[in-house]
Amino acid sequence: MSEIEKGEDIFNKISILIEQARHRVATAINQEMVLLYWNIGRTIKEEIIKSDRAEYGKQIVSSLSRELIVRYGKGFSEQNLWHMVKFYDTYPNLSATQRELQGLSWTHIKSIIYINDDLKREFYATLCLKEQWSTRTLQDRVNSMLYERSALSKLPEKTIEMQLKELKEKDKMTPELVFRDPYVLDFLELSDTYSERDLESAILNALEKFIVELGRDFYFVARQRRITIDNEDYYIDLLFYHRKLRCFIVIDLKLGKFKAEYKGQMELYLRYLEKHEMREDENSPVGIILCSEKGKEQIELLFLHEERIKVAEYLTQLPTKDVFAEKLHKAMLTAQQKVEENKDK
Image (cartoon, rainbow, N blue to C red):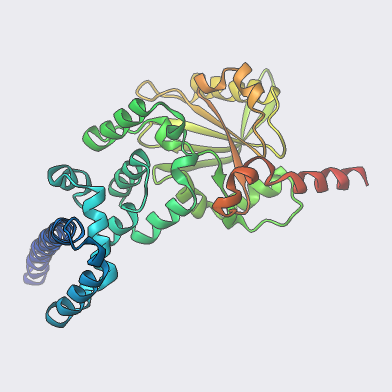
C-alpha cells in the first residue's frame, strides 16, 4: 500500500469514527430533549393546571413562557409549552414513553400526540421508526389517512396490538401492515377520461412515487409480464417483489367496479408464479386488484378477506377528510361514465 493509499485509508477510518460519534451525540441530545419536554409538561400539568389556580392556567403559562424565552430562547414559546403538556397527557407513563418513542424527534412527537386514537397513534409511531419517515412524510401519511386505508385497521384491536408489538420487537412485517385500501394515486395527474392502460402508464411514469405509496420494501419487477398457459398468452399488469414478506406481489388494474371474474384471473396468475417463479425459501405470491369500486357483497361471498387476494380501491385525487368516506366509492364514477360514453360514440 502506497503512502497516499495508506493516508486515505486512515482518513476513511477516522471519518467513520467521527460520524458514529456525532450520531451517538445527536441521539443522546434528542433523548434528553424529549425527556426534558415530558418533565416540563408534567410540571405544568401538576403544578399549574391541576392546582386551585387552574382558571388562571393560560395566563400563568403565558407569563412562564415569556420568562423562559428571555433566559433560554424561543424553544419555550407558549405554544410549545402547551405541546409539552399535551405530550405528558398523551404519554403519562415515562418508561412506556421512552420505550415507544425512542428514536423519534420532538417534531415527530408533536405530530403524533395529536392523534386521538391510541392504536392509530401507535401505528404511526411504529411505522415512523421502522421506515425512518421524515416529519413531512409522517404528516403526509397522517393526512392521507394511511392507518384507515391499511388492512390492519380492519382487524380486532387485540390483533392490531399484537402485530404492532411484533413489528417493534421482532421486525415482523405482516400483509395487513403492507396493504393499503384505498391506494391514493393523486400524484399521477390523470385527466378525467382514461383507460386502464392510461392508468398503468401513469403509474409507471411515476413509479418512484408509486413505490413510496406502496411502502419502502416494494421492488418493481415487470410491466405487462407475459405468461403462457396452454399455448395462450396472458399479461400481468404490474409485478413487484416485497422484501420483508419475501413474495411476489401481482397488481391488476381495473377501471370500474369489482367483478367476480377478476378473482379467477388473479388466481391463475398467482398459481402460475407459485409453480414457475417461486423459490423454496419464498412465500406464496399475493395479488392486489385495484378497482374504482369494490362491490362489498361480492367480496364477502367470494371470501376474499380470507384469501391472499386483496381488493383495494384507488383514488386519483385525494379528497378532504370531510368527504373521504363518500368519495371512497364514487371518486372515479364520472371518469368511468365518460369512458363508456366515448366507447358508444
